[in-house]
Image (tube, rainbow, N blue to C red; front, top):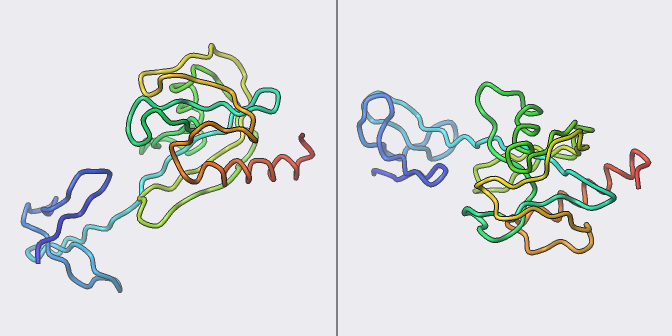
Length: 175
């Protein structure tokens, strides 16, 4: 049976090694797309995304997204890690690209994943070192918000991330 695999919105129907249609077969304990000709197994590996909670006077910097998913809703500055980056470098780069700010990472807030979402998100707490606050083409607006009064959010895990950030701050004696 030929299957259509969706990774980041792009269907994978053919083997990247020999271009034959993929079949669904039992492989490594679960059904996976497998090439019947060369045996290539198309593992559905998640992408790694990195971001940060950037704060000012107890408020959190969010971006209002100009793109889907979540167009018009608010999100933490974050994005996909490049293959040649360390995760910390990706977090700093994403903050700089999306907000114009240069940050130092103060510590790991947490690592987040959801079933059937295909993304692992690594979030750090960050402090602004410099730069000029300005949005990029991926966002319509930037704003600082109280953690108790967040605007409509693009991603359902953001409240849990904010709660973890609050716990992270309490552990360090920050207010």
